[in-house]
Length: 178
View (cartoon, helix red, strand yellow):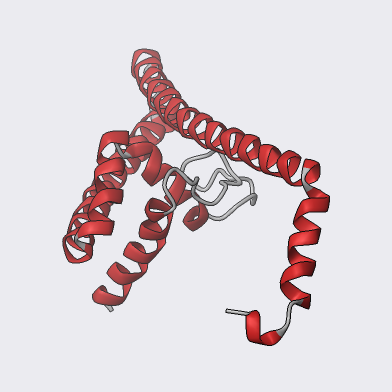
């Protein structure tokens, strides 16, 4: 079972890495896994975005290269990173849960204020990480759109030549075909 989970994680994250700077699947909820998503979105769908937001861009680039050159080592490094990410996320979630519990149950105003300030800080940090990842995704999509637009314009301008080349290819005698 553990190997299956590891393989699934490697495939999920590996595909996104192999695609260059292609963004992971979109997240439908900006909330952490505290169950505050209001029924909008699935925690498992947010994880790739959070994972990539957590990952250093230099490491992501190194992983892409490693995936091309040494797939076995890539799998090992991905497994290690996924394990590290999950451990850090579990620790963050536990700390956040403790702070929320302290805030909700404490009768001391100073303790409540301190817990609230920490909750706010953690929430702002998570938001900034996700916002940075969304910006990266947006820049990727804008660059891709620009390239597609240029391709479309080139093909539109050369439509008759492209059509004629295809007609020539289709209608030439079979003995002259490749």
